[in-house]
Image 1 (cartoon, helix red, strand yellow):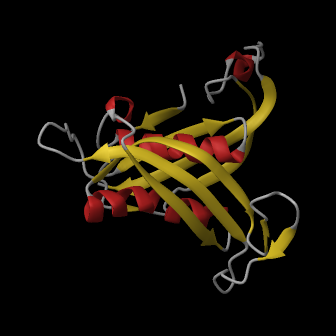
Image 2 (cartoon, one colour):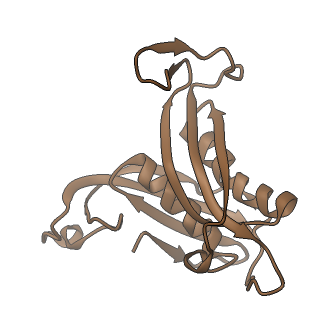
Amino acid sequence: MRYEILPHTADGKFRAYGETLEEAFVNAALATASLMWDWAKVEPRIEHSIDLRGRDREQLLVKFLGEIVYLLDTERFMLGRVEDLKIEEASVIRDPQGEADVPDHLSEAGSRLRLTARFLGDALSDRSEIHGAVKAVTYNEMKIERCDCAVDGSGSPGAADSGGSAGGEKGGYVVQVVVDM
């Protein structure tokens, strides 16, 4: 399990897990999509490159998940997969050949972090099954924390939460998000 949908009175709420912060963000994106469609059934026919900056992890997560809503609203794009997600300090970016670091003069004022990723998915069509609509990502009840739990290969807490071992290493990340539906 990469994420779990949590009960909430009026909105959508979920918790996503990962061995790394990047994996937790990927799983948060899939959880967001799952509130609207079955992301696992979306064919990877279209690619969107994502390049965002934020002053902290929370702002970066809100912008990142907001891109899913924005691309659905503006380009009728349904997310099916997230690949190559990287989070790094915005003041330095890697040379594409990996030879040197160069200053990032494109950084927004006050932005400390940069997220790059590729969204793979397909266009919304008459045969698409939509079962919800996320209007916005909120900061309400948001958490991005290290967890003191075993995280298995699927990005979910394993049996070590109760003192056992699930074959995962101790430590990982948990991300909690509430979205307006």
